[in-house]
Image (cartoon, rainbow, N blue to C red; front, side, top):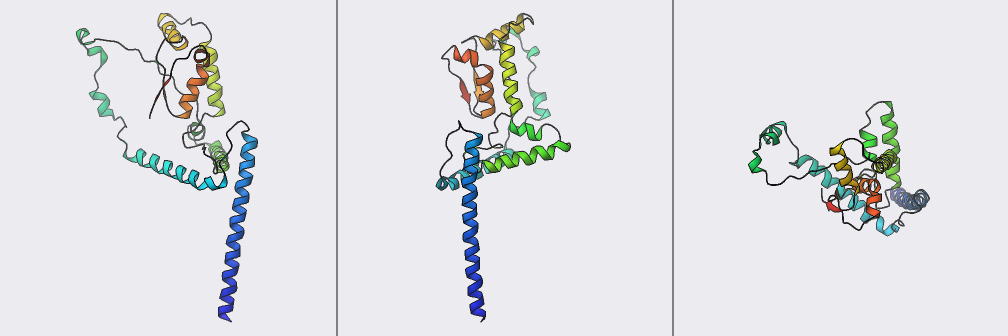
Length: 222
């Protein structure tokens, strides 16, 4: 009797696992359909057979990012800042060339939207809604947190910067020179991080300049 009962329980467990796998496969198919509706212009999601590869890639990137965050030596301490040379203390004879760098901050990313707007009552909603979006992206090679893309506000900020640069500069000689360097094709070397939020900011904010020239953009690995 016990052997028969154990056999029945084992059969039920196998059936339950089979049903669970079928439900998961059906959920993945539904997620693909939802993804296609949300992003009709995006590339087609990978077939179900490619989902394990996507999950392994995301897990590897997450692990690599966590290890880099802990072991990285890129952090700048206050003592390191004190050891830097003050440009005002340099002797004019030692300066052989001057290079002016213009830094443009990327627009708000989805990561910034979740974690950089404070931890008040709205934080839980931002976190849960983004986690749900991340769940929808599980079967596809995309993510809200890994190489976080621009948020809706970030896209709006890029448009605002493009509108600002399209107007004449009236802030003085130095500002006018910087404005000309940003908007004139070949006026300055364009360098961007390879991260989506940085490349997206450059492409959207300087789209008029890029459309008027074939100049390259140097993508610098982070």
